[in-house]
Image (cartoon, rainbow, N blue to C red; front, side, top):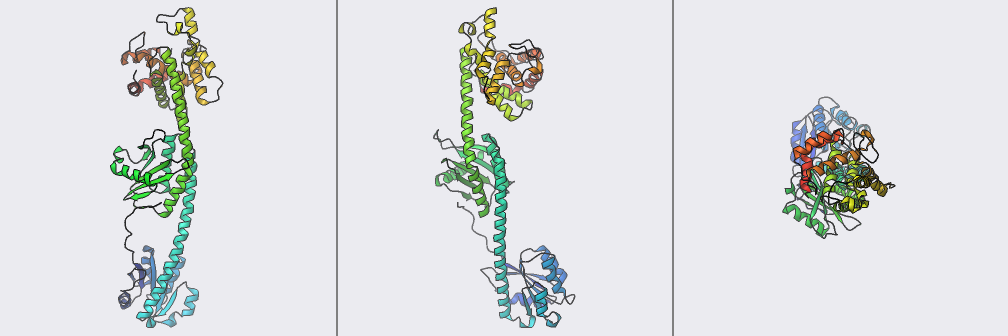
Length: 501
C-alpha cells in the first residue's frame, strides 16, 4: 500500500531546559550551544530561575529532552528536589537530567548518583565549551534512543489495541445480513477504527461483473448528502485506485483499494484526512481483508434474495395477468404493505418478509377455472363457491415450508379475504384472530383495487377512496391500518406513481 502525501515538515528542535538562579549561566550556556546540531535538529531553550519555576515549566512542556539543573537555588537542595519530583511525582523517566553545581560539597557526586535518578553530574567550573558540547551530545543521544524504544513500545500497544478494535468491529459487522446495513455498519466501524468521527466517509464498490459496467454504486455514506461528491476529480481517483490496484492519499482524500478472494474489490473514500499512519493503514487492511469474505457472502446472499424476490413478483404477475388485473398491482400492493408495516413499528426483518410475501396473496387463483376467473358478469352461487376456494388452494401450494417468507406468504394467501368483523372467508376469523400480515395485505389490496381502473370499473378519486376505506373500517378492514394508510396517503400515492399500470 502506498500513499501520496505532502513533504515532511522541518524537524522540530530539541528542547533544553536551563534551571539556574544565575542569569549569566543561562546566557553563557545558550551562546555556547547556539550552533549545536544533532541529526539536523538545533536546540531551543526554556528558562527557569528557581525550583518552583522549573516544576511549572516541566508540568507544561511534555517533550523536554534535556534539563541542565543547578543544585542550590532558593534552598540548598532545590535542584535535587526538582530531580526527585520529576521522576517520582511527574513520572517523567525520559528527560535527561544533567546536574550542575558550583558547590560540589553541597551535593557530593557519589551520593547524588546513588540516591537520585540523574544522568550526569558536572561542576560548573569543568563545563568548558568542549565539555558542554560532549555532555549535550551524550544526553540527547540517550534521549533519542530511549524515545525510539518508547515509541516502538507504544506502536505495538496501539497496534494491539487497534487489533482489539478490529475484532470488535468485525464482530459487529458480521451480524449484519442486509447489504445496505452491512455497508453502513462497515463505514461506522472504519470511522471509529481510525478515529475519524468528523470525517466524511463513502463506501463504494464497482458495478457487477455480470453487467460489465464500470461505474460505482454508493452503498452507504456518513457526513455527506450531496451526490456532487462523485465529481470528475474523485471519479478519476477511483479509476486510478482500481486500475493500479493501489491505495493513495490525494491531498485530504484517501482512496483505499481492497481486493478480495473473489477477484472483486472494495473502494473506500475518506474525506478530510491529512495523513494516515502506518499503523492505521495496517489496521485498515486487516479490517477490510477480514470483512472481505463476509462482504462476498453478503453480496451472494443479496443476489439470492433479489432473485427470489424477482421470481415471486413474476409469479404474482402471472396470476394477476391471468385474471386480467393491472400489471403492477402486486408491486404496488407489496410496497404499500411495507409502508404500513413500518408505520405501525413492525421490526424491519418482519417488514421485509411481508414485502416479499405479499405478491403471492392470490397464488391460489392459478387453479381457478377460466370460466369463473374471467367471467365478465356477476358470478352465480356455484361460481362464487369456486372463486372462494382460492385462499385454501393458495395455502395448499405454500404450506409446509419452514422458510419465513413462504410461511408468511401461506398465511397471507389463506387469510387476506377474512374480514375484521368475522364475515369473511374461508375461516370466518375476526379481529386479532387474523394475522397482522393478512390484515395489512387486505387494506393494501382494497386500496389498490379502488384507486386503479379494472375491466369492470373506473378508477375512484382519492377522496372517494378515503371515504370508502373509513366506511368499511371495523367491518371489512382493520381500522388501525386504515387510519395508518390515510395518515401516510402521500407515501401510498407516491408508490402508485412509481409503479403505474
